[in-house]
Length: 307
Image (cartoon, rainbow, N blue to C red; front, side, top):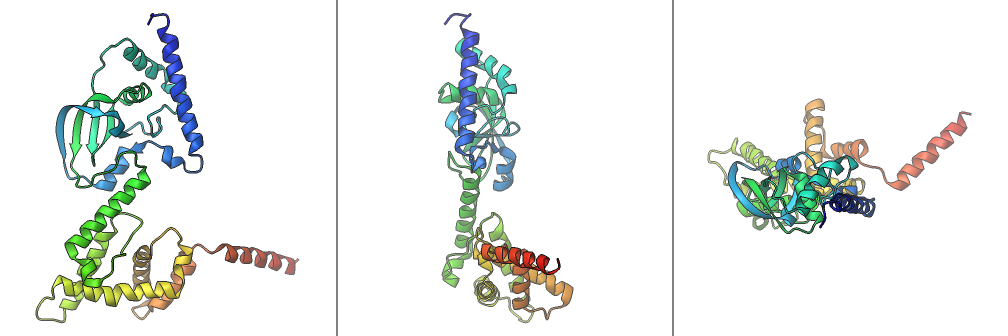
């Protein structure tokens, strides 16, 4: 390839990559987060790794590089450039590739079996655009028991973490066999630790009236029948789920039990669960379309009355 041809080739390569980013954005117009490069910081908060281990130089498959530490807003989820200000540097990296010039290794974090760019976002972008399958990288691994699936969106990664937390909770507490309840499901991470804490608090209060400490299995059974199920029944009786379409009934348990506790602290322990459920529904629940239309007509009628 002649040297005079190279600048026009790099410009053409960048234009193609930029157009792919634009087309990807159009394809995901209704769900733009699906076309967004994943932030390493977000996944680190999600997985909560315990320590870092320096892995040194490795050959890393390009398709396992799914996010970035600092440049996740500049590239889409395929590492195509989203902004024209990236052009100059992108083309210099592309030119080095076309001239077979070896560039320094990129720097990556490995977390959950996937990789996130510390340094070298443009090199990853050019490599993806050129169809390169592997790249040399200096890797720092963050230890996590959760393994993420390649090509996952952030939302799918959140779901994978929740599923992992559920497996661990059920395995370590034997919750399903004790209660015969296998649908303790949540829409956000971290809730199984909260539930376990609820059980331990319940166990503490039971033990206050006993000479010998009850086993955890008995505390789980008692919490389930005397705390969890009554709250679930109140949620059903007051039709609260209708106003929280994207939440699970266990999500609503967490919300309502917290709200009820706040009301009891404010108004006294005699504040009933049913009153708390009804108040919660009207204070936080999204009203149905029919209810909103009814309110609009009611307000319109009220205005006409006072004209």
